[in-house]
Structures are given as structure tokens and as C-alpha cells.
Amino acid sequence: MSNSPSRVNLLDFDPAALEAFFVNMGEKPFRARQVLPWLHQRFCDDIGQMSDLSKAAREKLAAVAEIKPPRVLRDATANDGARKWLFAVENDTGAENAVEAVYLPEDDRGTLCISTQAGCMMDCAFCSTGRQGFNRNLSTGEIVGQLWVANRTLLAEGMNAPWIEAGRPPITNVVLMGMGEPLANFKNVVAALQLFLSDHAYGLSRRRVTLSTSGVTPMIDALRDACPVALAVSLHAPDDTLRDRLMPINRRHPLPELMAACRRYLDQAPRDFITFEYLLLADVNDAPAQAAALIELVRDVPCKFNLIPFNSFPDAPYQAPMRNRVLAFQRVLMDAGIITTIRKARGEDIDAACGQLAGQVHNRVRYRMSDVPRRAERYDDAREVAALSAPGERRRSSFQAKHPVA
Ligand code: SF4
Figure 1: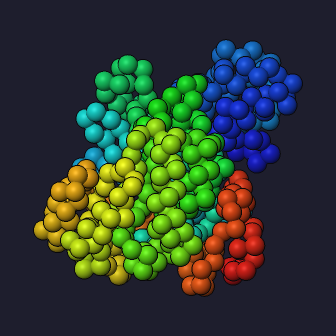
Figure 2: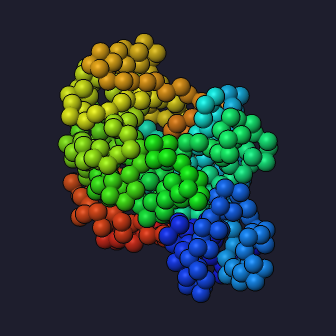
């Protein structure tokens, strides 16, 4: 596998972009449909092996392109079967950052939780990743590469499952719920989603791909229009006062705006409900009265709730809730007819549990949401957010210009 910086990474191309790439090379667009299965179904890392391309076509392609998944730094499996890959991604100074993907095997599926940014700018008060600040957006190849590595590794190890015998890859479900805010890296994330859904690549149904957002509302609309997949929203509070404190994004896009965006998303969503993730923090947001307030908040939004008892990490400012408080909170929601699950903690012995991603990794910090003054400073419109998410770049925007990072 070559690492020449002058070659393009074929994992960076969604199906339409790969067609355009071949046309630019003077080749027919159908070459994309030949090459995509080599990349994303056979997990091939050597252009020379693509035997349905002529030798001349392979040599022409290999002169300008390579297949470069992110490099695995660490690979650890927990006692409960959860597995975490730690990947190295270089920033524009050549220094390395680390991002993670977590594999959660179950009897009827294999789920991979992937990262979309190195670090995260959202600075949620309870989050280990948010504490590290933001470094950069991942490229499409770095996002897709996590799935590529997981599938390739599990196949090479001889993983056995009914769906593999039926010709499907080991990973059946993808959740964009790892490090980073996916909607702040919109262009690269949508390109990755196109590959997850393409029959020439991973062939996943929209219902098996879930994007989780902290609530960047203009981009929820943009996702609905560009590539609607199942949507999860991190809620974590029933009112703006508490959510402002826990999640700085709420100061820009408060709850009424978020609920309206959720209702609009349901017009195109592959599932007829939104999943609300609700992290339970002891004596902060776990009171029965707060569950009752949630019922009012989501009254017009068909939804399910997923309660996540807080996983503590070193120097965490919050405590895990008591089990009886978790069950009481669930009961209030269930009694109102809202399906409410409690997420089982997995992978705790390898720091793979929710909110612990990259807990032992120190990324270089460039930017935090809390650098923003408390006054309401809102994204001008979706285009500004999109401008924050050009491929693999250091972010340049009026927002950044006002808040330069050392
Ligand atoms: S909870 Fe999600 S959005 Fe918030 S800081 Fe952590 S990774 Fe970012």
C-alpha cells in the first residue's frame, strides 16, 4: 500500500465523485461501479488485484490513486465482547491525533459506532471527548475507513454469523455517535453516508444507519434534504436553562427550534420517530419531575427515548445516577406511552462506553464551543455551518475569526 501524498485516496470518493474522478481521467464512468465493490465489499487495499480492470487501467489508476485506510494504533476487546479500535489521523502540521470506533456485537447484528471529527468543538459539560476540544474534521476516507477496517478485520479473523453466510459484511448497523458532531462535518459525513447506503459499496438500509446530533438545527434540515437516515438527538435536559449549561449548542439553537427541526425531519426520515438520547446525571437531570417536563417538550414529536446512565471518567464533574432513579425516570416516560429503553453499558473495561471515547487520548486542542460568549450568537444560516465543514481542513469562518485559537 503506497502512502504517496500526491495520490488521491480512493476511500475519499462517494459513488458520484468516483464517477467524476474516472471521467476526469479519460475513463468511462462505469469504472466506478467496477471499483467500488473492490474497495467496500472485498476490502481490497491493492489496486493491482482489481482483476476486472485491464492491466493498463490498473497501472493508470495506481499512478494517481491509492487505498489508504486510517492506521490502527490500538485494538482492544472488552470482556463483554465490545471492541475498540483507536486510529491515528494526521493533522495539517503532521502531528497525529487519535479517533475511535467501537464494535458492539449482538446475536442478530453487528453495530459499529464511528467518529466524525478528531475531538469535538461542542464542549458538552459531561463529555470526555468534549473536554479535549476540537482539532479537525475527518475526511470521508477517514470516516468510511473505520468501517472498512472493522469489516476487513472481522472477516480476516473468520467471524461467523448468519448474515455473513448470506453474503453481507460483518457490520450490519452503523451509528455516527463517536467522537465529534457529525453535522459540523456535513460534506464529508454525507459522502460517507452515500457509501454506506450504496448497493455498490456497503448496501445498508437507511434504517440501519443512525446519525446522532447535539442539535445543529440548520443542518438537521440539510441532512433531511441531502441524505435522510435514522436520526438520534442528544437531549439531556427538559428545559433551556439546564440544557444551556450542559450543552453550549443550546445557546444557539434552543429547544423550541430543535423540536421544530425534529418535526420537519420526520417528513423524510426512514423511521417514523426520532430517538432522543438522554444522559442521566445524578441530581442534575434525573428527577421524575424532569421526566414529566420531557413529556410536555416532545408532545408533538413522535419519538423514543434511550436513557443513558452516566459513565464516570477521571475528574468527571458528575456522578452516575442511582438505579432506582433511572427506573423511576423510565416509568414516568413509559406511563405516558413513550417507548423508553435504558442503554446497557458495554466496554467499560476498555473505556469504550458512551462518553468515554478517547478518554485516554490527548488530542491537540484548537477550539471549543465554550470560547463563545454566553450571549446568543447564532449561526447565520445553514451555509455558515456548511462552510465550517469543508473537507479535512482547518475551519475558516467568521465564527473562527472572532474566536481565534492559539
Ligand atoms: S457529547 Fe457529543 S457533541 Fe457533546 S462534546 Fe461529546 S462528542 Fe461532542
